[in-house]
Length: 425
Image 1 (cartoon, one colour):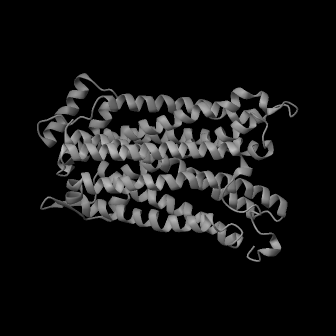
Image 2: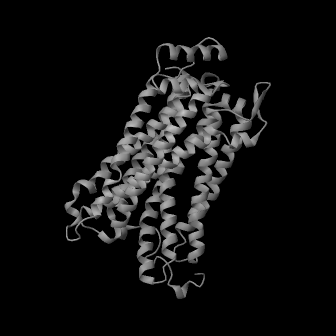
Image 3: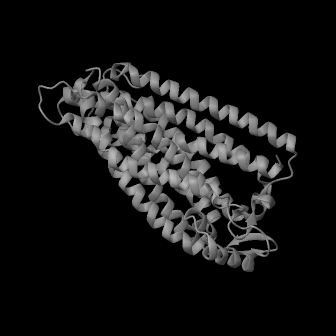
C-alpha cells in the first residue's frame, strides 16, 4: 500500500475509534448534569441521597469513558503533526485556530473542572459542585464545536482566500456559520442522544431482568428508551436535511451516496472535470454502502428504540423480570447504534475523497514527507493503542455497570452534605 493509502487508513481508523468515545461522553455528561440538578432541588436528605446515588453511578461510568477517550484523542494530535504537514502548511491559518482552542478547552478547562467535580463530593458546597459538572458539560460541547468548525471547513471551505498557496481567513463569521458545520452538529446531536439513550436503557434493562434495584433503574430505563427514540428521530431528520444540502457544496459525494448512474452521473463527472481538470474526482463507490447501512439502522432504531420503555407499563403485579425480551432489546440495539455511528463518520469523511479540503487540497498533497515504513509503523502503533483503549473502556464499563449503584467508585457514601451542613443550598 502507498503512503497516501496508509495515511488515509490510519486517519479513518483513529478518527472513527476516537469518535465512539466522544459520542458516549457527550451524552453521559449531559445525563449526569441533569440528574444532579434534580438532586439538589430536593430538600429531604433521604430523597437527595437516593438521587445522588444515580449521579455517582452514571457519573462513574462517564469518568471511565472520558479518561480513556481523552487518551485516544492524543493520537489525533500526534497524527496531524506526523502525517499531515501538507494540510498544516496550506490550511494551518484556518484549521489551526479551532484545533488550538479545542485543545485548550478539552485538555485544560474540561479536565480541570472534571477533576474538581469527581473529587469534590462532600468537599465542595452542593451548588458549586453542580456548577462544576455543568462547566464540564459546556466545555465538552465547546470542544466538539471547534472540532466541527475545522471539519466543516474541510468539507465546505468558505470565508477565505488563497495567497501564495496558503489559505488566509477573510471572514470568520462565514467560517463559524458554515452550513456544513451546523448540519453536522444537528446530526451528531441526534446520534449522541440515540447512543446514550441506548446505553442507559441497556444497563438498566440488564439489572431489571434480574430484579435488582428496580426502583433505581426503572426511571432510567424509561429515560434512556425515550431519549434514544427522540435521538433517532432527530438523527434521521437532520440526516435527510443534510443530504439535500450536499447537492450544493459536495455534488460528487451526493451523487455517490444517492447511487446515481448513467447520464446523471456523467453530468456530475463532467462538471467536476471542468472545474478541477481531468481525473477521477468521485469518492469510492463503497461509501454509498456505508451510507445505506447507516440509513437502514437509523430507521430500525427509530422503530425499536421506544419499546423498552413499555416494559414498565401494564399490570403492577407482573414482575419486570418476566418481560425479558423488551428489557434485553437495548443490549442488541446498542452495538447497532455504534455501527451506525461508524458508517455515518465514514460517509462524511471518505465521501470527501479525493479531497482533504474540498476543491482546494487533495489528500495526496496533504500528506507529509513520510516513508512507507514510517507510515506503516505509526499506523500499527496508533491502531494497537486505540484498540487496547477501546477494549479496556468496554471492559471497565461492563464491570462497573454490572456492579450496580453500590459499586460506584466516585464520591463518598454520604453523596451530598445534609442541608444543615451545606449553607450554600
